[in-house]
Structure formats: C-alpha cells, structure tokens
Amino acid sequence: MPRVWKFGDQINTDDILPGKYAPFMVGEDRFHTFAFAHLRPEFAQEVKPGDILVFGRNAGLGSSREYAPEALRKLGIRAVIAKSYARIFFRNLVNLGIIPFESEEVVDALEDGDQVELDLETGVLLRGGERFALRPPPPFLLEALKEGSLLDYYKKHGRFPGE
Image (cartoon, rainbow, N blue to C red):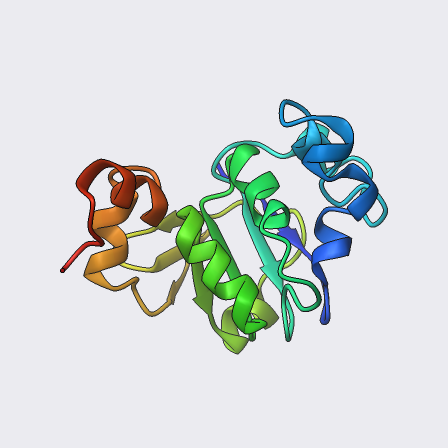
C-alpha cells in the first residue's frame, strides 16, 4: 500500500533535488537517487513507486528546474497533494505526468508514513476507514497519462490531448 511522505510549507526545487546533484553533475542515470538528500536522506532509497508526496503551501517554489520533478517521476511518484503550488512547479508536474492535487483539508489530515490508497482518475483517497475526495484530474491529463506524461503523449501523437 502506498505511503505518504509529508513535507511542510515552502519546499523549494533545491530541497527536492539540490543543484549539485543535477543530471549534468552526477549523470542522467543517478540524479534521482539524491531526491531530498538534505531534508530526508533516506527518501530516495526508501520511497516506493506509487507513494504520495504531501506538501504544505507554495510547493516547488524557486527555480524552474525541471529535473526536480523529473527525479520524483523516476522514483515512481505519480501524485502530489499540496495546499498550494508554485506555478512553474505545478506545470512541470503536469508535463511530466505527475498529478498535482490541491487540498488544505487532506494535507492537514494526513501524517507522514500513513498508508493510503489513491484512485488517480477519481481523486478518491482512502486511509483506513476514512475517505477523502480530491478534485479529479481533467480528462486531457488522464488521456496523456496513458502514454506516461503530457510530453510523452505529444511525442507520440504530435499534438496535445484534446486538440
């Protein structure tokens, strides 16, 4: 069952993947193994595909480093829940096929290490006997996710979903 990895407010892209571990510094094949190296050194070794990241306010602020959310994707993160997002980080998540859900209630309710189930299509999150409703992703994003990401969809079809 997927695990929640909970972080606080103002987690920036350098917190997610410190610049000294950028792909051009350590290699495309291993940069993701340094995700959250300074905040949670165990993260990249312990995270499992399907685990969910939970952030407070203004998740992903800072530079527009696409390799920060790309590291999350390479580790198997398919969804993030936050109270709010920095605009560029939100867009990079969407482009890379990671669904950015937004909910103050759910962020406040979840604890680090919680075991949850999340239906990416409906936005229904289950924790034990509790049920939370997140706004489901738009149909174009769900269509793109069938190819892996919005960018993968474009590479295959030469257009974006819904065009």
